[in-house]
Length: 333
Image (cartoon, one colour):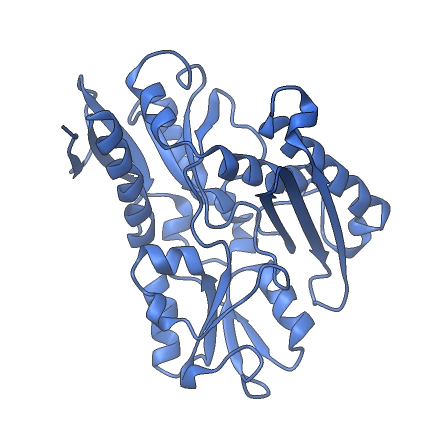
């Protein structure tokens, strides 16, 4: 027997046997939250209700850097959780600030989707074959720096809007291409728009990209309640550790989640590997550091502790090499 998943109309009242999951109302946010809800319903037999919450980042047309970074999407969601208007939240992990929110914790990180960035271009162009001066849209300072480091001839344009809006600008000829997260395109069933996937070894993505975070009120991640059951059902230990390592870099550099920083972690053959790169915003320079940790060396195969250790070592190397002089660090986390 499995539970049901429904979308709440307006405010969802607290009811026994029903788990209320808060989400942004965009098509992508609802799609990824519904996927998590369905996994929880199958594993726990709980009925799950999706509660859509409008954030300032959804209504403003300002650039993300002017708004203060992608963390602007989290504020209204967190306020709703603290007000008991929902029982847990689903965030895109790359959009979640690393600074802890008082009274809240990340209780689970489900298995990661494709972490790569993808080019969606006219004429089936790849990054290499885009014509000189091609107009490429992105709202990410990291992607701007990475594009300019490889193709300084490109005309990189700051854009906002949902996935369909961005792809529409390519279809209409206003832009020659846009760069989007492969995970988001996959969750929306739009992978047919991709003309080039960027290898993580060459184009590391935002810390946590492709992963989701389930945030709950502090204390509810333990025990035997419905929330704790839901978290346990969907948490993926390897993904959780890799995301922790990547976000440790972001926190250690005191950088916002829109900063020109890429990080990629993986667990392979008993080792946790982490590589991070800091870019000058114009793409003219970059610094990279890589380290590995053996979880077993921390006593009880403690992936979380290994993740924080390897992240701290990467941060130390980047700062010693001059990362703070390369990129705007020390901002809102």
